[in-house]
Image 1 (cartoon, rainbow, N blue to C red):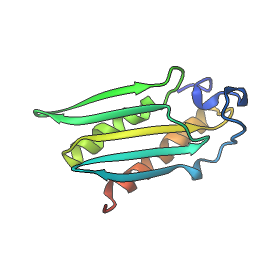
Image 2 (tube, rainbow, N blue to C red):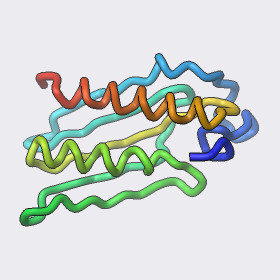
Image 3 (cartoon, helix red, strand yellow):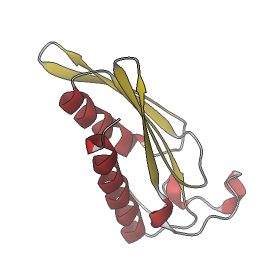
Image 4 (tube, one colour):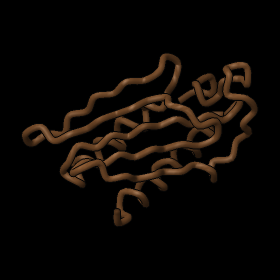
Length: 126
């Protein structure tokens, strides 16, 4: 992801001022019947992308919807696929993260925090 991605948008995008603070990234896990919903947020919380993955034969299929200009789908798709494979059920990952003026290194740090927290949530009991 480059610095001009959605996570690097200026405050004029309607999110307000949100300096880089990846420690505020949160992952919530909720059981929805036999399926699982993960909500991943940080900075200016919003809905940037939603990915749903589900077993289909011996494969894991995934469908993603993203808001134009948002790059969260780059993380939500792989997270949903991983969780659906591990949990053997339908998994939806809703993600919205925004910090102002990120560098490419900071974007990588955000990605690292997202996957670290996602793994914790994936392995935590419901």
